[in-house]
Image 1: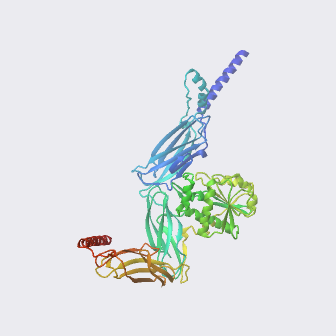
Image 2: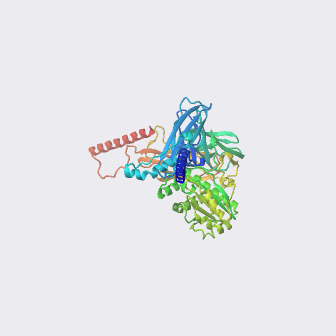
Image 3: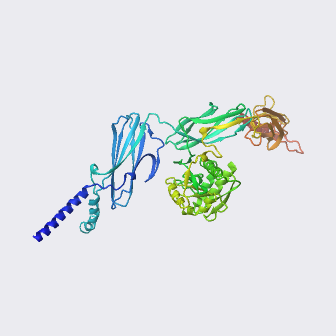
Length: 632
């Protein structure tokens, strides 16, 4: 009986084990949490987690929508099996699209993503659409593990070296869900960013026009057209229509006509224009527009910028790793990247100068451990900042964290926080400022930086509005205030309008005159600056023939005319130094010769005289043809 009892117990245990295994094999086991499932409408995907979100989720019929789906922490026992399911409902709630993407892997791969292109049919109605995106974990963990465990014997006795992935039905599988929305419209709304305003002058004399130049960015994936307008006291005074390529920017110059004396308010607007909180550093195909974070640490300040202003100023980014020599050549030329970086760094410095009550010339350094390229680029960029804004700065080179006694502003350029910031306690106590510039578009280390700063007192994050209203007023929608008065800070500036050379009637244009025949040279000028005088020069064949100081009131025109008497045959080139103005006239001798004859002792023979006449006639013909061609 005992034996039977033991046998019965063993059988019961075996049956229970089999039932338990069957239950486990039939139960789903979610290999990832809902937070590990990501879905987005994108314009470009580089790899897992590296994608550019679409600037607006509005599509026209015929467009293609690119959908990014990804899961993390999906691997269990060196296996993963995921079903991505897409269901799209139209504005009336009808299902108009469905798709399933199955992914299985036998590896340690823990991140899975798929990019699904969805064409928008012509018959889809306009309105709001809903995307229900699912990620089903269909891996049957225990049978898959058993397949791995039996693999050794399979290889020995059957030669089969492939384990199998066991899956379960989606009906029984756990899942994570994301909901997205997009719109279908016959017309794609265009959105533009206006930034980087440059006003020629903020104080002008009466009667002088002004110029406002702005940068306009098209963040879309297609060519876009907009009209940019400048308004003075609410009245449109100039407008320009501009077409901008995808993810590109254009500078637009707008003219402000002469205004009456007093104070005027100027602003710019564009059709469907949007205004960014931070200026973008544009490095195709990425737009750097992430918020700058500021805050206090002890008595000092920390500024974290994820916008790659320093390396990005000359074209270096996580997706565009150009050579240092080319980057430096880019830095020497005005561009949107460089100019925006200069403005934003200027504003950061102006912000901390005011916030921390700095005075006099401030020493600036680069923290040792920063990106090596910043050691070359930062000092040159700061030179441009000083030149543009007269910022009171003195760059003192690369310093380590323990040698900052004379430094007030410290830059760190890197894609992750350096542990050396935990050594900056004395620096922050001494009213120092740390500016962290992250050149990696794909990741942010703000939280890691905050955790490091906890060890020295914590980072008290506050408002960063001061960065946008320092040396420059970057939010152009606030407008400019311009004063028009009789007192001006502008220099005298003459504009050369035209140059004309005329001979006696019948000599043509350009003139062909005889030696010693006067020609009239006429130059028309205007003073577009403040009242004053400038020296006016006119050269003929490189020799100054007119040099006189002329005085004009603001806005006054003047026509200068003088005579020039050529003494030798040939061609004469009239120029105004410092301008592109140029005119030509020709001079011949009465006999048609273009050069003075060589003295001879004997009179020429009849044959030699005939040769001279023939040569002179040929030269004269060439001059006449040249005159006709130039006139045409």
